[in-house]
Image (cartoon, rainbow, N blue to C red; front, side, top):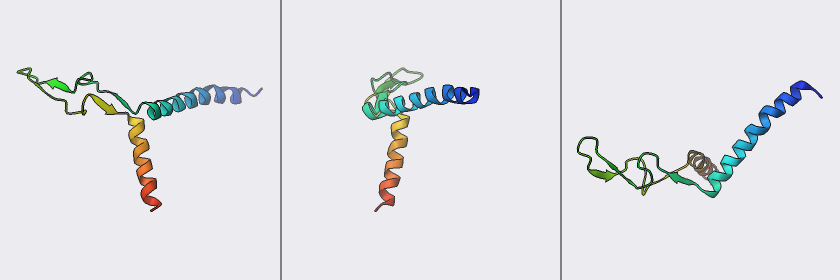
Length: 82
């Protein structure tokens, strides 16, 4: 066998599996828990430690980056075919 073909398949195959796995995860579960508030939807202020709504999320869940990219491409494609 050709060593370059073996090396290329050893690099490309895992990258392809990881990409397809993340795409499947974004399709099955498009939301993830917010890391800032821990999924509660509330954080505390820095000095007085009063609770307030989390700025990054809505109700403790955030849209995954891969799903956000998919939504942008889907919106562009749907607007282009009108």
